[in-house]
Image 1 (cartoon, helix red, strand yellow):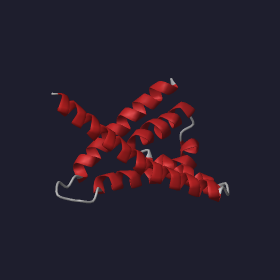
Image 2: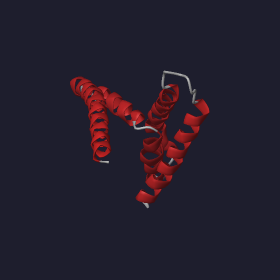
Image 3: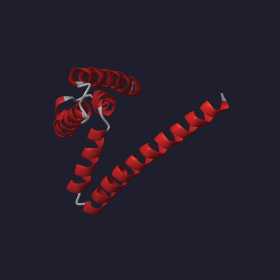
Image 4: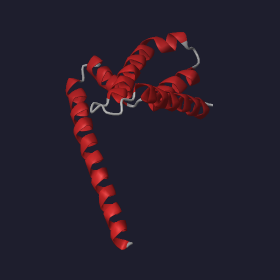
Length: 129
């Protein structure tokens, strides 16, 4: 039942993200405004839901479906932000800073590595033809 709740929430969150992205899309804009708006909305909703959700929704499976499924597919950025805030609330300042810096630096680094790997593979496939 938990997996079904996560899957259903994930489907709804992913489709909503897609629709909002289309709604806010600006073909000539250089700034990724749709993604920023989606991530900020998701961060707010997750922050609110972490505090109020369990009191409003008594079904733990539904809470999991909303938090992990819906908000997880809508944006993982919200989870990242919530985890940093929770670490700060626990007084784990150094851990929160390390998590933020490592996530940002390694995330960007791995995107670059993935792009370069993909480009190299395309060049290799093009050379073989």
